[in-house]
Image (cartoon, rainbow, N blue to C red; front, side, top):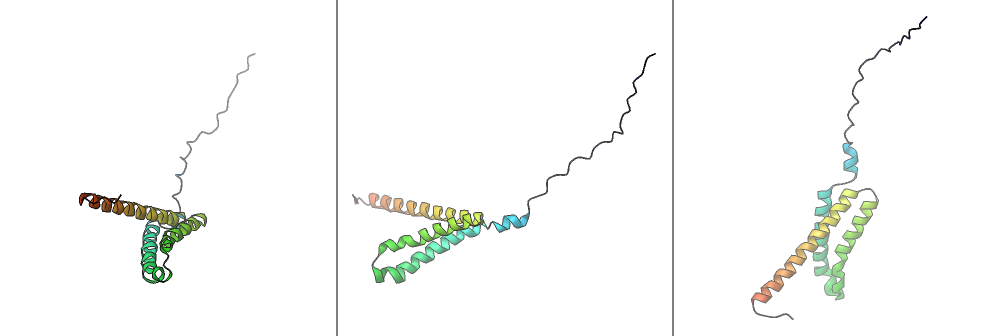
Length: 123
């Protein structure tokens, strides 16, 4: 006597496809700040700080080294913002400082180029 094996096949239904991942929460991105706001804030702080120092503080104290204060304060604020969770605003501040340094470098190079064209040797 031969036993026949009967396999009972379970009820096979097609599975539904997995749901797509939910988009990132807009509030989380806003909570990390704004890159553009940080960029323009860096420009505002450095330019306004330099103007105020040139007009009011430097003539009184005769200390030119104080002109380094606005960029240093901006860099310190950027680092604090990055570590406190406003990473996009802090990055914007650092990018603003980088753009200011690039423009200063280009202006200094242009001045040396003009002096070279006039025939004067600054060295």
